[in-house]
Image 1 (spheres, rainbow, N blue to C red):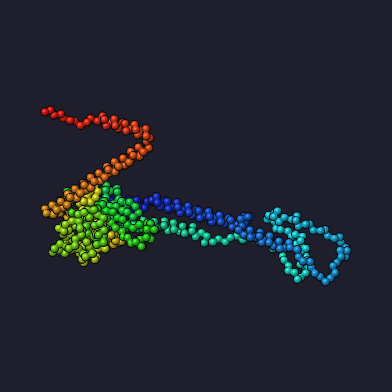
Image 2 (cartoon, rainbow, N blue to C red):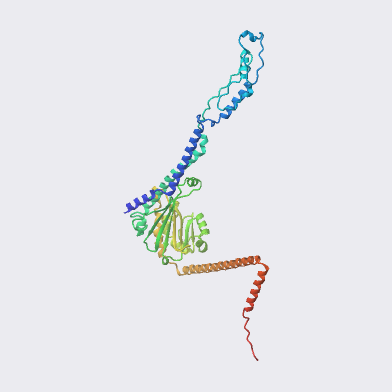
Length: 479
């Protein structure tokens, strides 16, 4: 039956979640946008599309400049020989060249410019005179395609890389947390374990619900019941957010640890007036300021009980009465966990104890234990700490205060209840006065908006109502 439950628990933890599907959809969308951008830039860089080449404007400007330079008339050639007459060539004179005003370079686009007549004369003169520099018309070269560079896609590549790392870390961190939770359950909640021997029902006890209830990627809960003096025990494992890459990076700076908190709900008639806390000095100081029951009824113990060995020096006990602290923190507890020598070995897994019959909420009588979880292959290191839970359940359930101590604690609770009642009455009076003030202010605002005639009628009605009231009764006496 245990194997079936573990199989069902693993199947439940391995099922896909909605957040994983969202990460996959986001990754596919960004990859599609990146592919579309790359294909668009490749199409623009292709030489088969005219008018889209980024170097076209520079090429046109170069051709226009060369045309203007070649159109400038060259100086007439100087020669020592006699100019030949037209009659010596036995051919009719050539026709005059057409005027250059009829040529429009911008009329046809995409056609290489033809040589102008003036350009032909200038080139012929330059050929006759070797002293003049020769200029050859430049031909338009085909545009070269733009080279593909990864630097222009740095932002897109960074986003895609981050999403891939985030997704991979989510699944790896989730499986890591599940492995730690299952390692704890297999050590302390399976057959012949501590909780199996001390509680008759683990989880719901129907055989269908898994032992560990998963409330999130890093939060697991465990429930046990069926023991005298208590209604049940709730355990909450709060692990590191290993599935969150950002939280994992912040954990490098702000160190946190995997913790487990046990809350034992005691029966109403099985716990006397007890307010006690045990933690390290810094934690105890913070608890004394934050917890109302400790702040109102308890105070830190400066000196230990007379003739008793006490807890390690780095621990602080906060108790309502010194007698209660001496009776609950026994020699067995000191030898197992809280003694000077033993605490050096097992103290790194201890966080706090808090026993109180005045906890806020519906379940007032609670025992709270908080420990640090070791690594999944070293769960046996916290066996002594877990063994404190059934020990203190029996100890608190049997414990009875002396008559003197009981009268002192009863008087303190009666005084606290009376003060709480007065505070409640004062709060009600303040609420009523505030409500009356708001109503009066509202009436004044309404009267300020009324006209003079309306105010006169209202005053007459009020006067008539006052006259209708019966006057005080007067008893006539006769002499």
